[in-house]
Length: 131
Length: 375
Image 1 (cartoon, each protein chain N blue to C red):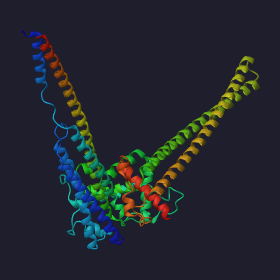
Image 2 (cartoon, rainbow over the protein chains, first blue to last red):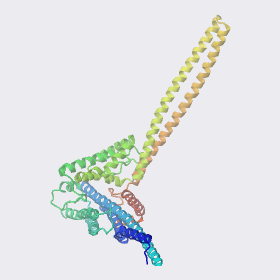
Image 3 (spheres, each protein chain N blue to C red):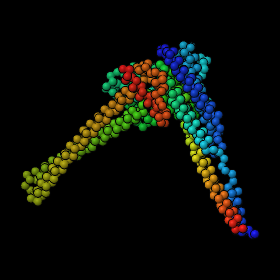
Image 4 (cartoon, rainbow over the protein chains, first blue to last red):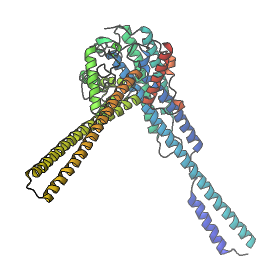
């Protein structure tokens, strides 16, 4: 009984590639997408609340310097909230992109690994039949 | 001091402010409590916490309006008149919190508010756009309820007319100044909140005048300006052509005199006589041509003048339009029938992302509809 040296060499190379492939990229794209969706909801709610805050002076029946000061403050609050909503929206978008990136990476890893394992199985069966 | 601020509206406003503040603060704390999932590279937990803190701060600022208003109402320091300003800082009441992180203190409070108010007055006189009676023939009296606090009607009319004249002279600069004033961007960016508070009153003006109407006015004003320039050019052209026509006529007369003199003296050769006669006829043709050109120039000038008249009428129509479309924040008319729910609910961001200015326009349209119904 003798071992085919070429097949043994190929098997070693495949094993080496599997080791090089390393760990599967960690994380769950679905979880990231969930957070992105939550942030999107919050961004919408914040924008809505900000716009309402900016419209508060319209509810009141007064005019004059103090009223103007109050209205200016309401405007500031509204614009600050809308600005924060825009930031949230940007974060949500970034998370969505991250989810896509991670999913692609994991798919690539899975495909590579599957391919190497199939090749390894093929080489092993060849070795078995050649014995 | 005119006690127009009724407890009902104070309570309504305070209630809404308090509810919205609580809502924002809840969202802020929820957002900052999230942790970034494993596997994300670009977003850090610090980003989330920063946005959450910003929302929370905005919520606290909105909520502080509640206490501020109620305190004022309890002290009978109604939000109208000088009392509001004089006792605004000195009455020991709860402060109006700023939604922005504190910046470096560059002015004292009174300096800041003073500068802001000064700017407001300048803003009123420079950037206000509502038809004044001198520019708009259709309005024979400036509406009294549109006169801002602390100004006589006459003074306000004068400033408005000056403002409109300035806007028509240089629409680009006008739009720039108006935009800068309206958002007080520099002040907010520098964290100079006191000054910005004063300056934000000008933003109220921005609320009052729909931007589309303003831009229509700007376009009309620019066209009117161009039409005026055209009239000037065409007038100068006509003068030149008239001069050329007069010169050609003088040439013709001189040539005629020369020909007649030569013919009457009986000394000139027939060839010279023929040449003079040709000159005489040619100069007459030149004069006729010059006359035709001058007539054409006069017609062009009349046309340009008619166009300028038309453009002026369009500017006035645009001013009237801006005036008509003005929502009723600072007027008494139609203010009573603004129901809280309808006003607040008039804006739904889930219909699509609506920028803030556009949302104000939408609310203004709602007001218009409501007024139409109540009349």
